[in-house]
Image 1: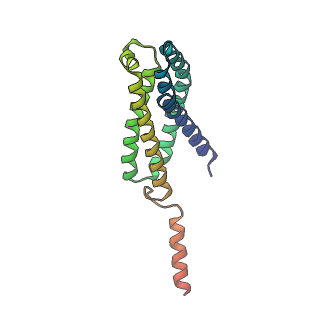
Image 2: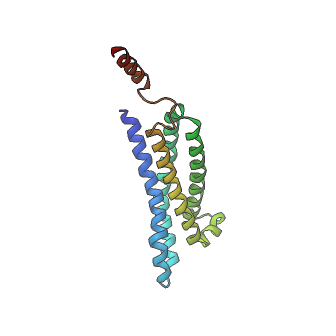
Image 3: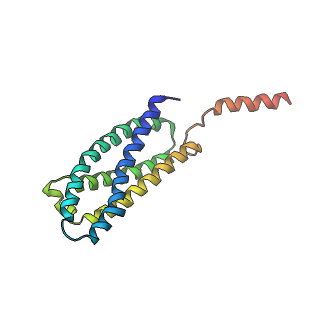
Length: 168
């Protein structure tokens, strides 16, 4: 087992959990509660987004760095079917990155997105769920050998089967 690859994978997963988890928290908890509370809710959301923006910024840097590392490690070992799922996932990740940045960045360019915060948070939450599903699919493709160019140990298993047939 390569401990560096394992550590990078865990940092990648924990960073994704941070981004998607915060988005789901906003969608499922924060915005429904704020709709029921009168007054002061916009200031609370802005303060929360500013504070979370720092954490999300660090998480996104870790996602990109570890994701590129994982890509370099995995790409030589997989078939084109894996690349198709990876491409779809990367497009959705880019959209999620843009939305989460727009929601937490104080730039006037993102004012329209922040004005419709609840709608964009809902969209980002669903994007995050789809990204996690695609990630799990990619991992299962590799674990089951569906996406691998060569199954681990396949050269050895070929020798074992030839030995067993000659012994009979």
